[in-house]
Length: 277
Image 1 (cartoon, rainbow, N blue to C red):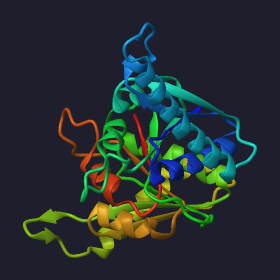
Image 2: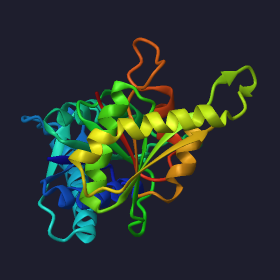
Image 3: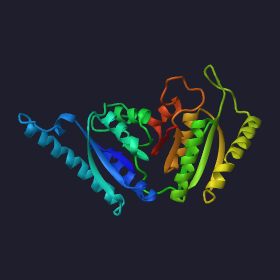
């Protein structure tokens, strides 16, 4: 099951359309979910019954518009609507426990001007019980490429498995990108051609098992000098999907999502998949 959280915003409708296409590719049912205050779902609201009904009607309108957007994107999708009682972040996190994938828009109708990502999107990316896809904008047409970022960590390994599977489903090429740079005060060390070649050779070797499990995927490995965020933003500029792990090397204990993934939540140029450990 794939869950998409919607709130009536334009980006929420984009997320619903993206999720519908993904559900069709995976042959999975789609649940279109909208969170509402718990009290409007409780029985015996004599005093506030009319207000509760008005709010439920509004929530059902949001769900109906999102389901319509999903069916426009993929008419044959198996979709159902669900009202989730509770605060949106917690309701979606709880619902994600039984899902294969949780999809949300990057910002909702409550977004604060100037912020690039909403609090709900940030919260579910950090705490969801399953993999999360954050939709900023949905590409108007398939571009035929998936980009995966890797740094050799265990989190990257799971992200690569997800990325190979996605590329296989889409019949797309996979670009596996690793940033190569040593930080120093004020910037990074100059490019080291021999170091990059050694890193590329190691990256190619690490992809052997994935290629054997997904023989139909054309996978290209790249090692690029630069900061990981900038390298991945550039690589994903013409991609259908960017895939990262939730945490990589060097993350502080207690952080639920790494600094690179954090930055890409705000700046990814295409839908971003954050793969959980």
